[in-house]
Length: 197
Image (cartoon, rainbow, N blue to C red; front, side, top):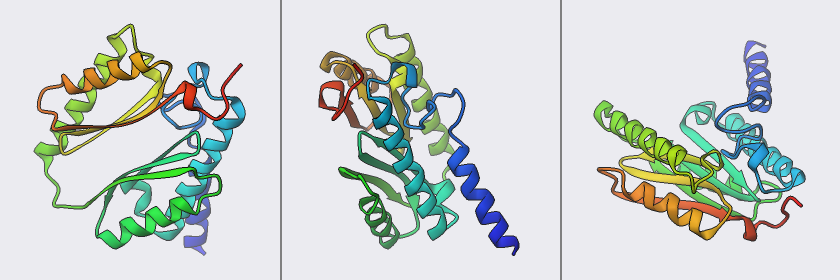
Protein backbone atom coordinates (compact mmCIF):
# COMPACT_ATOMS: atom_id res chain seq x y z
CA UNK A 1 0.00 0.00 0.00
CA UNK A 2 2.84 2.41 0.87
CA UNK A 3 4.46 1.76 -2.52
CA UNK A 4 1.19 2.52 -4.27
CA UNK A 5 0.80 5.83 -2.41
CA UNK A 6 4.44 6.71 -3.11
CA UNK A 7 4.03 5.94 -6.82
CA UNK A 8 0.82 7.99 -7.12
CA UNK A 9 2.47 10.90 -5.28
CA UNK A 10 5.49 10.64 -7.54
CA UNK A 11 3.40 10.68 -10.71
CA UNK A 12 1.44 13.67 -9.37
CA UNK A 13 4.67 15.56 -8.69
CA UNK A 14 5.97 14.80 -12.17
CA UNK A 15 2.76 15.96 -13.81
CA UNK A 16 2.51 19.18 -11.78
CA UNK A 17 6.19 19.93 -11.30
CA UNK A 18 6.48 22.24 -14.29
CA UNK A 19 3.95 24.83 -13.18
CA UNK A 20 5.40 28.23 -12.36
CA UNK A 21 8.06 30.49 -13.74
CA UNK A 22 11.53 29.02 -14.01
CA UNK A 23 14.39 28.66 -16.45
CA UNK A 24 12.60 25.64 -17.88
CA UNK A 25 9.48 27.61 -18.72
CA UNK A 26 5.93 26.66 -17.89
CA UNK A 27 5.96 23.71 -20.26
CA UNK A 28 9.36 22.35 -19.19
CA UNK A 29 11.10 22.50 -22.57
CA UNK A 30 13.68 25.12 -21.70
CA UNK A 31 11.80 27.78 -23.64
CA UNK A 32 9.96 30.65 -21.94
CA UNK A 33 6.28 30.60 -22.90
CA UNK A 34 6.23 34.35 -23.52
CA UNK A 35 9.01 34.09 -26.11
CA UNK A 36 8.19 30.62 -27.44
CA UNK A 37 7.46 30.79 -31.19
CA UNK A 38 5.50 27.53 -31.11
CA UNK A 39 1.72 27.72 -31.06
CA UNK A 40 0.10 27.18 -27.65
CA UNK A 41 -1.31 23.88 -28.92
CA UNK A 42 2.16 22.65 -29.90
CA UNK A 43 3.56 23.75 -26.53
CA UNK A 44 0.84 21.79 -24.74
CA UNK A 45 1.33 18.73 -27.00
CA UNK A 46 5.08 18.80 -26.29
CA UNK A 47 4.48 19.15 -22.56
CA UNK A 48 2.03 16.23 -22.54
CA UNK A 49 4.50 14.08 -24.50
CA UNK A 50 7.32 14.98 -22.11
CA UNK A 51 5.27 14.20 -18.98
CA UNK A 52 3.93 10.99 -20.56
CA UNK A 53 7.45 9.75 -21.28
CA UNK A 54 8.75 10.82 -17.84
CA UNK A 55 5.89 8.95 -16.14
CA UNK A 56 6.46 5.78 -18.16
CA UNK A 57 10.18 5.94 -17.37
CA UNK A 58 9.38 6.35 -13.65
CA UNK A 59 7.00 3.39 -13.72
CA UNK A 60 9.69 1.28 -15.39
CA UNK A 61 12.39 2.20 -12.87
CA UNK A 62 12.17 4.92 -10.17
CA UNK A 63 15.87 5.75 -10.54
CA UNK A 64 15.21 7.17 -14.04
CA UNK A 65 13.58 10.23 -12.44
CA UNK A 66 17.00 11.36 -11.23
CA UNK A 67 19.23 9.82 -13.89
CA UNK A 68 17.43 10.63 -17.15
CA UNK A 69 16.28 14.00 -18.50
CA UNK A 70 13.84 14.34 -21.39
CA UNK A 71 12.91 17.36 -23.49
CA UNK A 72 10.33 17.60 -26.26
CA UNK A 73 10.38 20.36 -28.85
CA UNK A 74 7.90 20.23 -31.73
CA UNK A 75 7.46 16.47 -31.36
CA UNK A 76 11.22 15.84 -31.31
CA UNK A 77 12.35 13.99 -28.18
CA UNK A 78 15.81 14.64 -26.71
CA UNK A 79 17.12 12.38 -23.94
CA UNK A 80 20.20 12.88 -21.76
CA UNK A 81 21.48 11.31 -18.57
CA UNK A 82 23.24 8.18 -17.41
CA UNK A 83 22.25 4.53 -17.07
CA UNK A 84 24.00 1.38 -15.88
CA UNK A 85 24.21 -0.58 -19.15
CA UNK A 86 23.56 -0.35 -22.91
CA UNK A 87 20.39 -2.46 -22.61
CA UNK A 88 18.75 0.26 -20.50
CA UNK A 89 19.70 2.88 -23.08
CA UNK A 90 17.99 0.85 -25.81
CA UNK A 91 14.87 0.33 -23.69
CA UNK A 92 14.59 4.07 -23.01
CA UNK A 93 14.97 4.80 -26.74
CA UNK A 94 12.19 2.30 -27.45
CA UNK A 95 9.91 3.94 -24.86
CA UNK A 96 10.60 7.35 -26.40
CA UNK A 97 9.69 6.15 -29.90
CA UNK A 98 6.47 4.64 -28.50
CA UNK A 99 5.38 8.07 -27.22
CA UNK A 100 2.35 9.20 -29.20
CA UNK A 101 3.28 12.09 -31.51
CA UNK A 102 7.05 11.45 -31.51
CA UNK A 103 8.62 12.73 -34.74
CA UNK A 104 12.21 11.86 -33.86
CA UNK A 105 14.30 10.68 -30.89
CA UNK A 106 17.84 11.79 -30.12
CA UNK A 107 19.33 9.70 -27.34
CA UNK A 108 22.46 11.19 -25.74
CA UNK A 109 22.39 8.90 -22.69
CA UNK A 110 25.80 7.81 -21.41
CA UNK A 111 26.69 4.57 -19.63
CA UNK A 112 27.35 5.28 -15.93
CA UNK A 113 30.87 5.34 -14.60
CA UNK A 114 32.27 5.92 -11.11
CA UNK A 115 31.37 9.37 -9.74
CA UNK A 116 34.07 11.95 -10.31
CA UNK A 117 33.60 15.11 -8.22
CA UNK A 118 36.24 17.06 -10.14
CA UNK A 119 34.60 16.25 -13.50
CA UNK A 120 31.12 17.08 -12.20
CA UNK A 121 32.31 20.43 -10.87
CA UNK A 122 33.98 21.22 -14.20
CA UNK A 123 30.79 20.34 -16.10
CA UNK A 124 28.75 22.59 -13.81
CA UNK A 125 31.20 25.44 -14.36
CA UNK A 126 31.02 25.01 -18.16
CA UNK A 127 27.20 25.07 -18.05
CA UNK A 128 27.23 28.21 -15.86
CA UNK A 129 29.71 30.00 -18.11
CA UNK A 130 27.68 29.28 -21.24
CA UNK A 131 24.39 30.25 -19.56
CA UNK A 132 25.95 33.58 -18.53
CA UNK A 133 27.39 34.17 -22.03
CA UNK A 134 23.97 33.57 -23.61
CA UNK A 135 22.27 35.95 -21.17
CA UNK A 136 24.71 38.78 -21.92
CA UNK A 137 24.70 38.29 -25.70
CA UNK A 138 22.07 40.70 -27.05
CA UNK A 139 21.71 38.67 -30.28
CA UNK A 140 20.45 35.62 -28.36
CA UNK A 141 17.12 35.01 -26.59
CA UNK A 142 18.74 33.02 -23.73
CA UNK A 143 15.43 31.83 -22.28
CA UNK A 144 14.88 29.68 -25.39
CA UNK A 145 17.77 27.32 -24.59
CA UNK A 146 18.42 24.45 -22.21
CA UNK A 147 22.04 23.44 -21.54
CA UNK A 148 23.44 20.16 -20.19
CA UNK A 149 27.15 19.35 -19.87
CA UNK A 150 28.63 15.87 -19.49
CA UNK A 151 32.38 15.18 -19.51
CA UNK A 152 33.20 18.55 -21.10
CA UNK A 153 30.61 17.99 -23.86
CA UNK A 154 27.89 20.62 -24.06
CA UNK A 155 24.38 19.59 -25.14
CA UNK A 156 22.21 22.53 -26.24
CA UNK A 157 18.45 22.23 -26.84
CA UNK A 158 16.07 24.96 -27.87
CA UNK A 159 14.49 27.09 -30.55
CA UNK A 160 16.32 29.80 -32.52
CA UNK A 161 14.48 32.66 -34.14
CA UNK A 162 17.09 32.90 -36.95
CA UNK A 163 20.07 30.98 -38.33
CA UNK A 164 22.27 33.86 -37.13
CA UNK A 165 21.05 33.36 -33.56
CA UNK A 166 21.76 29.63 -33.86
CA UNK A 167 25.33 30.39 -35.04
CA UNK A 168 25.81 32.84 -32.14
CA UNK A 169 24.78 30.16 -29.62
CA UNK A 170 27.19 27.63 -31.14
CA UNK A 171 30.02 30.18 -31.24
CA UNK A 172 29.48 31.10 -27.58
CA UNK A 173 29.60 27.40 -26.63
CA UNK A 174 32.80 26.78 -28.58
CA UNK A 175 34.51 29.72 -26.85
CA UNK A 176 34.12 28.19 -23.37
CA UNK A 177 37.49 26.99 -22.05
CA UNK A 178 38.07 23.19 -21.88
CA UNK A 179 34.99 22.25 -23.94
CA UNK A 180 35.68 19.12 -26.00
CA UNK A 181 32.51 19.02 -28.09
CA UNK A 182 29.26 20.91 -28.67
CA UNK A 183 26.21 18.81 -29.54
CA UNK A 184 23.42 21.03 -30.83
CA UNK A 185 19.74 20.17 -31.05
CA UNK A 186 18.39 23.59 -31.96
CA UNK A 187 15.21 23.86 -34.01
CA UNK A 188 14.72 26.95 -36.19
CA UNK A 189 11.36 28.74 -35.95
CA UNK A 190 10.85 28.25 -39.68
CA UNK A 191 11.14 24.47 -39.22
CA UNK A 192 8.34 24.28 -36.63
CA UNK A 193 5.19 22.56 -37.80
CA UNK A 194 2.90 25.22 -36.33
CA UNK A 195 4.03 28.68 -35.24
CA UNK A 196 2.42 31.52 -33.36
CA UNK A 197 0.71 34.06 -35.57
